[in-house]
Length: 338
Image 1 (spheres, one colour):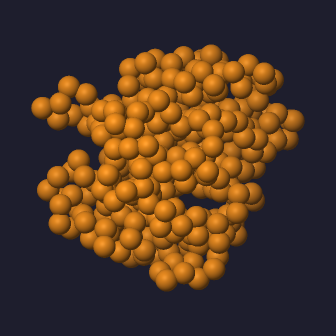
Image 2 (cartoon, rainbow, N blue to C red; image 1 turned 90 degrees about the vertical axis):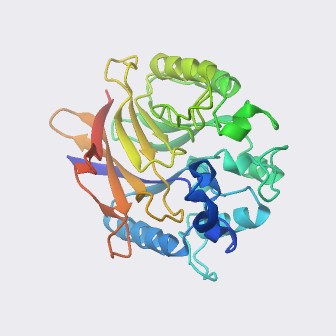
């Protein structure tokens, strides 16, 4: 197998100011529902920078993918720090940066990015900053072209497209985005079917949400109409790979149960955990490295997803864990063409 393209997939960075970075120590360890307010760890930004630089130096062609929640509370200062880190390599107080000027090309917003930008306030019209960064609820972005002339494109969906400013979905961090799916269908209907399609979405399709005995709706889940429509979209348009985040579970990679896909290959989801969020006794910081590989003997192209973590290791970067991690599958693959 020869590697023709590499994607470094990060998610749930949750940039926050220094005061909020200690919020977890006080409250979130007792109330897991507040987990999303936990800010970033500056050390993990350095580890991410080291990992990105190493892969850029050793892989043939590397792009960055971001599946949402740049910020903890959608504050302008948090967006400033996130954009500085992703776009520049200029020294900042606690980190340097990745220097990816075009990072927005392969990125989607998360639910925290669409808060009103008022401290500790999820309710309200979303901060205008997120609309400036992500102006469309659905879009299609060309990434590169395979050697056989087939383009690889990314489909971006805003999982909060239909979430009201004061709705239960906003409070429970549930995805609602039927209108965005319909918009994406309109875009795809005008395109040539002969392309490889990768879907970016903040909310996980595989993750059922968290269960609490006093709640009828599961926080962090996708509402039923959106789930029905997204599963139809995957099959109707032969989408075989979905990249997500949001759940703050360590990771998931594998086939989506009950979704065969149009070509019968199935659909594989790679759900990134939180890449740089501050953690204490809660799991692993993680990212995925996705590689497009060409099998010259069969003329097929394979998408391989490999988990990289930084947990108890003393290494100052994220490292590949191999086939399994914590008793779960940590690497999987799917044929993306033909």
